[in-house]
Image (cartoon, rainbow, N blue to C red; front, top):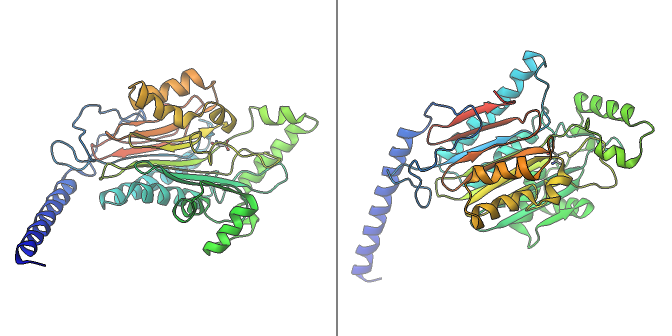
Length: 366
Ligand code: ASP
């Protein structure tokens, strides 16, 4: 290497270190701002979004939204229960925020948040998954990185402790997108992934819902079983914009209580329950069949890309004009840091934050 090349390399390194130091200081100064949107929609349109996740004022932009499903507690539920859900969402939001402020990649943050919620028995994903008609659990999950369009998903797994972790391995370690059932579990073995007995996912509350479902279904036809409005849903998801301007989405679920015949919902279907590209990241929750039918997550991205709608316009169109009342909802974030969380059910566990000071944790319309 010549002396000139060495000098150039030294200059490059010095410049890089200075820029990194400056952006870290600026980020530390603006992070954790108060404010809170409360409505679940943080628009902030036009307030300085720039290229590559760095705002025009030099500060680093990040945003995150989380959902814990569109099947929520009734408003009249005991205060302790409501408090516990809010605390779980607060905890997940705090973890996401800390990771983003440390500069972690969107796809890693989305996965970490979903894994945390999979381990939380209150949510219908991982531990606490809904019971199938036969009294077991079949879990679905998917993850997608926007700027590369890399994605991975698993459907109908029964012994994998973290379905989202396995979906990530499908994305990182295979040339496939979706692995299902026994094949997905063989892949888990090959990857040395943690396995648990199916009963690991049992919780008394979900068992009670299953018992109630069985009582209600006694004598009903199979068509009635799938359309009964009382079948409560739930799912967890996370959408992220990281400081590099990269987007990612992750979704994990136990599906619908009383599902049968290997039924798979929208959560592991890229383009239906999960999608991310360079413009938006989306994670859905609700009656999976409807989200598959309308390809909701991809439709949202298309509306932003082709119709030039804002993420909130596109999200609201799909939730209020395309889906039917009580079908569910979605969370979405765009490359400018705007968050949208519309739903057409009674409520949706949701939380969001951004480096612009947006911060909310909500269950119903508050
Ligand atoms: N969408 C999920 C499914 O249909 C359930 C949910 O989000 O609550 O499997």
